[in-house]
Image (cartoon, rainbow, N blue to C red; front, side, top):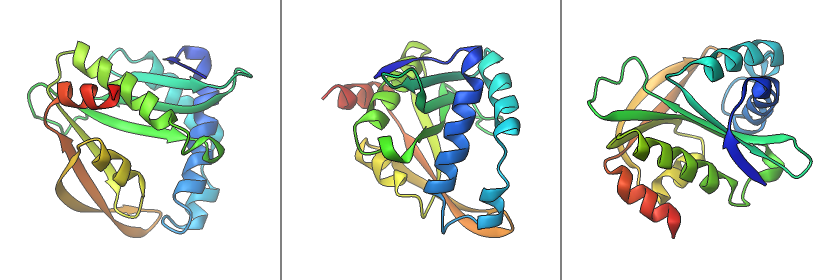
Length: 175
């Protein structure tokens, strides 16, 4: 397994993981019609832009066959007005690779980047029904707010978590 910075030719592989993991992670949370209409082509376009953006940092997990099986990214959202803060915007892993430590490896690489960039605080948004929130809590994320959002015509609770000290998270990820 290799964790590395995403390259422009990774966009379609990331898009496949993005769509497929949404369909498994959010099954019975987000309306089925919405999930069925997710497009590999549209997600590929999105990831081509994200990878090309200097403000966004994306990494991939590649299996021994050279296939992208997970990814993570971080960048400062427009509504994040907190000084020296950034956002962990996503960690997605194909279902068959979950529970094997890949999420920790991706998060470790992201937090090393956040640390190198001088960020002190990191925010992450996660749907309340998504069990990934427990992963973030395990690594010290603290719930600071709950908001309602709409996806596919359904109202959902979104939880906003914060890590107040990037150095502490980096240390915890080493253990």
